[in-house]
Amino acid sequence: MKTLGLAIITKNEERLIKKCIQSVPFATQIVIVDSHSTDKTVEIAKSCGAEVITRSWEGYAKQKQYAIEQLKTDWVLALDGDEYLSKELQDEIIEIIKSETQTKGFYLKREHVFLKKLLKHGKGVDFQLRLFRRESGHYDDRVIHEKVIINGPCEKSKMAMIHESSLSLNDEMEKITRDTELERVYHKGGKIGVSEIIGKPLKYFLTMFFFKATWKDGLPGFIFLTMTSFKYFLLYSKLYEMNLNSNKRSSDELSSM
Image 1 (spheres, rainbow, N blue to C red):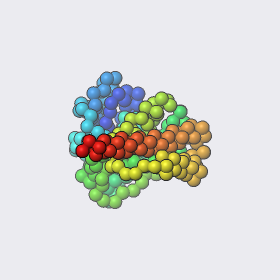
Image 2: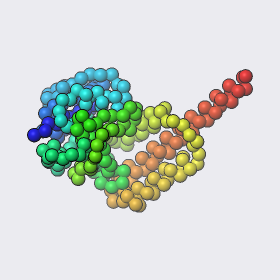
Image 3: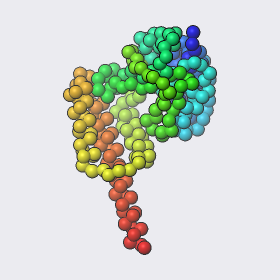
Image 4: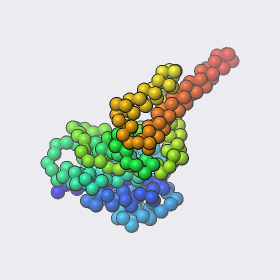
């Protein structure tokens, strides 16, 4: 049987790291790259049989790439410390690595838990390329929204993993602030106007609510969608502000010549 290695990056993930690791009982190697956690993440991970490597933060992609480079298995499963496999997805992955499939990577279905509800529609469900043959995949060099580059065909899983990223609205707002700041810093530029600041978030909300059936997830789904739409509003507003400041600096430089 082919072997599977579990790669996880962590910082202060004591809440779910045990559940994350134990949801992959068939992993033959477990590597965790930890960015100087101050809670019990490292202690818990080691007690679950993981090899823990402490490494200063260099961005999501570089941390994850470093983690998979430590593995010597046929397959790689890359998870975050707040994710875990359902029993159904465990069984599906076991069948995949047992098979003689020529597929090089699998996008795993991911369902989000928000305000104690498992979301199954709209943005509450996505697919992440997390399972791949070790020699066929590597992470790109993005600082945020990193992606695995696969040399070969990919498929989607039928079953889902679970993502519990935010315990509260405050957690979600902190995540939105952090992510938009990273995206602002590394944005390539371009004109930002009314269509971006108002039009894109509104279009996103309406598409997800009506056409992707977010309304079926009740009030937690509505709140999650509203906050995600606000994230886009905030990002484009920050980019607009950045352009204003850039234009002001250019005008100041011209006037001083």
